[in-house]
Length: 185
Image (cartoon, rainbow, N blue to C red; front, side, top):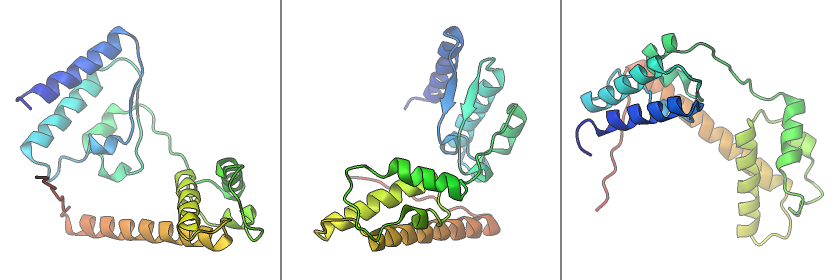
C-alpha cells in the first residue's frame, strides 16, 4: 500500500457519507481504533486519521465493540452517547434459545430449553452452542441432538471465554500485549 493511502481512503469514506447523509457503522471498531499505546508508527497514524475524521464528522456514526477496554483513550471525548447492552437475563435467554433453535433440528427428548437457558450466555454464544451441538451430533452419526451435545458445547464456550479473559488480564497486568504476525508463502 502506498504511503497515505489509508488516510485518503478513510477521508473519502467520511466525505461520501457526509454527501449522501448516511449513517456510518463500524462493527467491531476495536480492530480499527485500538489503543495507540504500544502500537507502531504506521498503526498509530491510521488511528490518528480515524480519530480526526470521527471528530470532524457531523453525521451519525455508530461504533460497536465488546472490548471497550482496548479502545484508544482519545475516542471517549469524541463520543456523545454510550449504550451498553447488558447480558440477557434468564427470560431473554429462553426466548433466544427458542428463536434460534431451528424448527427442523431433531432434538432428543432430554433437551429442555429452559434448562439450557440457565447458563449465562449471550445471544451469539447461544447461537454458537446450537451450531456446535449440531455439528457434534452429526460427526457422531446421531439421529438427534442430545442434552449432552448442548452441555458439551456450552462448556467449551465457557472455557474459551475464561481463557480469553485470563489472557487479556495477564496482558493488561504486564502492560505487554503480544501480537502474532502470520506470513504465508
